[in-house]
Length: 173
Image 1: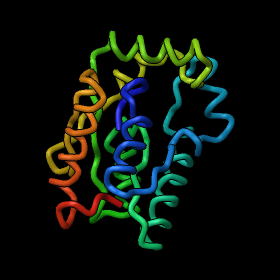
Image 2: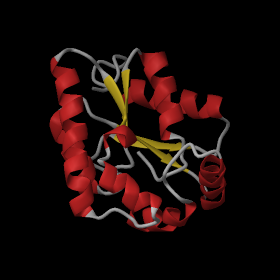
Image 3: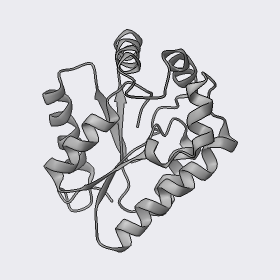
Image 4: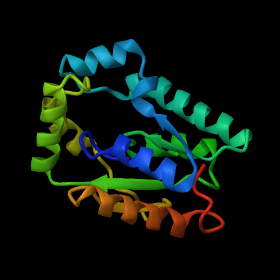
């Protein structure tokens, strides 16, 4: 979880490889209207997010039922959004909250927009930072600093997931 530019997709691919999990890219589940809204520089509201979060929860639950552990990228900016995701597989869902400095995040978002790799414009970063609700004490998960070099981010995230996962190293669902 985290705002745009934290490296959720890059980290999820690495976690999937390291922990033998199937990766799901949350952005691929956005309906076209959500993508168009963000690309036009407008933040999503709860009405936009509700069906998207439900689809992500369903995707995770179906894989869990099939015995497949997953790592899912999702901004999950607010507690209620995380509650929807957690309800799909409550006993095995944990969150890796990627945090970083606004300057680093903005430069990453700008760089990927230049290469046309993403629809999220830098202008929405401030809105996401305002919306972000850090994990609460009763939420399973922890923070990882994404300003660090990627190998350290991956090491920190793998350590966190292994420490917090049921069974110690099987990974989250």
